[in-house]
Image (cartoon, rainbow, N blue to C red; front, side, top):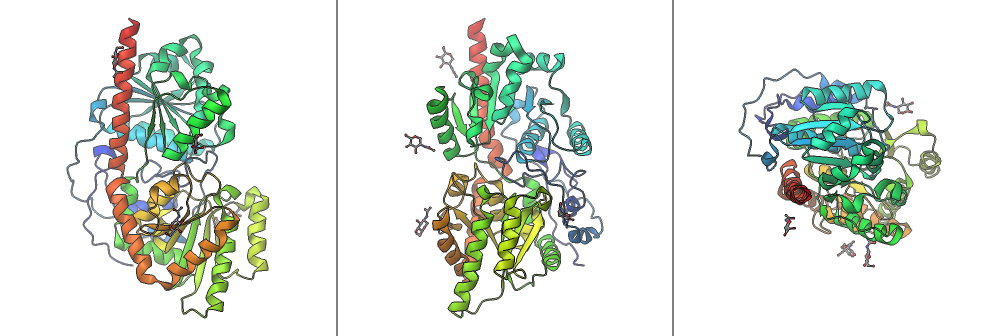
Length: 486
Ligand SMILES: *[C@@H]1O[C@H](CO)[C@@H](O)[C@H](O)[C@H]1NC(C)=O
Ligand SMILES: *[C@@H]1O[C@H](CO)[C@@H](O)[C@H](O)[C@H]1NC(C)=O
Ligand SMILES: *[C@@H]1O[C@H](CO)[C@@H](O)[C@H](O)[C@H]1NC(C)=O
Ligand SMILES: *[C@@H]1O[C@H](CO)[C@@H](O)[C@H](O)[C@H]1NC(C)=O
């Protein structure tokens, strides 16, 4: 087993010294539910509310048999862009507590705020979609970091909402909580509500969820295209006006960056994952990492992949074997698409080239193992698509649809290659696959540029700066409102 030599130091979320060992990341593979507060990520796009990951590749567990390392030296953190939130009371309202994108993102915000000394409260108001064990573990992680979780329906929730400086509603669905719990006090709370929206689907445009939207202090949305969509749809469908809307692109957690920048960790992970899939080191591995659904485009990706294999054969190109891996499968769901994907692979006789991996929250091992990320989301695309910036952190080129958040993250031709969605995209994506397989230098250069772009604008620090700017304005505005009411 390779010895870890990189003397990497780390400061965790907003200044908490993390006893960082790069091993931590590997450990996460062992038990998603116990290492949650670290290295936690929204493996699936935050648009996807119902994805919960708990299957972890077992073969990677071996990777964890590496000895503990002493803690690295402490490096002073830069002052947090959220430091003005010190002593502020913040209530976070989550529709659920689970391992899906939305709640995990809110949890990251909770820890960022805690790290600057804000008083942070958390309430969850929907029935758990996760097992008690997962929820228990998540609540403990929050408690460990000083975030207090309590019932969404009691007096405590109302009292906290009334005395809070800021209330963050997470996702459109969270709007239901306002009337249901606050009742007559809704109007008093609305001026200090920041609504964080991560979804872009028709059924969220219901007055039931969002009728208070025009009266809150602000809306924070993950991408320009999603914000635009909300503006249009609320006006057209519901005849309501969006409040002040801020676009906040997400950032990679420090923990993910640590793994991405640790060449030894990456190599170990790469070897283990490739071995588990039966993919050799020199083979070229393309991955689509998203829960399996038509919206995420696994079916079209496989068609492109097959077409790429045909092109290579026809043109007698000299390339190493190409492989595709679909990470995010769930056969137990018995969906038509899961069956269809496997039937397609059988029918085209590419079983030795296509691999299916169960849903997981632990994507770092896969990002370390693959050569190219495919982001094939269809229609309006991703709200943001966090996996895209995560892959770029691992210096991977991105082959993505020119839609949604992907088009805001990827610089076409520089950090990735964009193709159209739908059937028209199948042939272009196939060509891009062949291009990156045959032009190794180009592939590596695109990957490096992606990494540079992440370092420039998609780090946790950047996200905290963006959120800080929004919170400042929201606080100022709500103060103004309450002073006028007096
Ligand atoms: C919103 O509406 C404007 C004007 O009708 C249109 O140009 C724009 O493309 C729409 N945006 C979205 C995301 O639908
Ligand atoms: C993947 O999920 C299926 C169905 O839920 C399960 O039978 C299988 O054991 C899982 N595979 C791994 C490697 O965990
Ligand atoms: C990406 O760049 C290619 C080549 O310049 C161009 O043909 C394509 O239309 C671009 N796609 C998008 C979505 O910008
Ligand atoms: C506060 O209210 C005053 C008067 O209504 C207004 O002029 C000012 O622009 C407001 N400031 C902010 C930050 O909203």
